[in-house]
Length: 566
Image 1 (cartoon, rainbow, N blue to C red):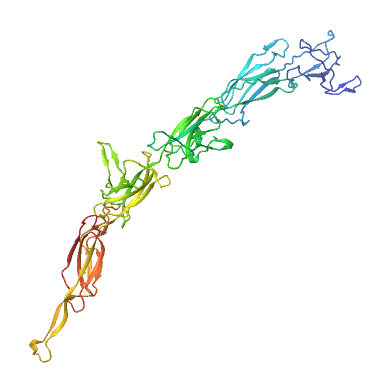
Image 2 (cartoon, rainbow, N blue to C red; image 1 turned 180 degrees about the horizontal axis):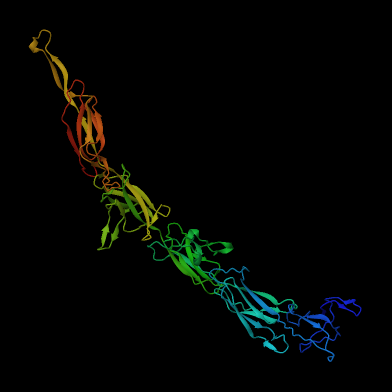
């Protein structure tokens, strides 16, 4: 109880200043309290709570003010009363769920911290603080359930003060149940603390298990598969793999997971073909053969699903077969002159197996079974063997050239080996080794010979009559005659290539000057390496003292066979 103003005595002197506490009382079990101080009249007073009951919040906003004025003559005393209301102190409990191994709120693999259900239980009887209601929760009662969010957190508030414990009811995906009872004591912290805040941390073990595999090899000949050492494997969490536009995984941009000892992201098969990972967290993984033993085919990526907790017991052995490397041979026919692909079919080749000292035979079965010992290019100058070749050394031998070309007997040797550059067919996944085999086109050789009368002698002597005297001439070779050779028709490249407009590419158009020849002392001049076709030869300058021959000559060079280069 406080003085609401300065209180003066009969002489006008201030004996109690404003705000002085006049009396302090404490409520009883009935929640009531009375003041006994004899208050002077004609003064103001106010009452304010200075201490709330246990487990309640002090009411600082409610100040009861009253004035004690002069009473009627017939009234000896008066009373004043007011009811103060208190709110109970509440409790809030916050749960943090973390990964047991890392101690952080970051889930491993495909596991999640979200969705774990916890129960909040009364450790002891929870009693209402009003002293009348009694027990609101008996010891062991479920008070509330909490479900963690994506951060692994959950919260409950407006609780009564008391002793509780938190226990997990349902674990989140990928984690084991935390069976520990986490005690939380929500005790009173004074009447100025409206809410008591407590927290507890639940550390959970992620589900883990190793996987294991056996790597074996097969070359297609042995009846029993051999154990394969040195195959390396890398794993990626499937849910984290970037996806390309074509729907395939982009492993180059992905981060591999730790699957080996000492933080290694790879495991490698041993001499028995065995490879075992460490225990890896719950989730689905894509495992890739990241390093393939020499001359073996890489297996397709496969999935490993970890859904059971057996950290010391690997999954059942998975056996993977590495096929020995094979490759189809592709031969592209090229023009040694133009360097372009020869778009003329039927270049014939045989393939000789150097290691076995025999020619390769292959088979097609549609529409009927056919044995092939020779292989032919198509209209695109291309051939691909129908079957793959096994590891070994081979020689490509040209048997016949396409029309217009000469057989190239400088055979090409190749090795079918993973060290040899190869491409992978996007449709069949076959390895393809490509070889360019060049042929020279057959050509013409034009020789011009110039002849004419040349002075050989003189008949008759000094005593001969005049009619007996004469110069003698004979036919001889003439030097200095100049000839021009023109294309008598459009002359095309032998490779059958076309320009951007779809027209065949020419060496010469009709009427083009091809070359100029001048005869030597033997009266001859030669033009070599002329593309096959028709030409006309015109003398444009006669030797000194001779008359120009006005008659042009036509010459046609035609293809003989693939053994006749000129």
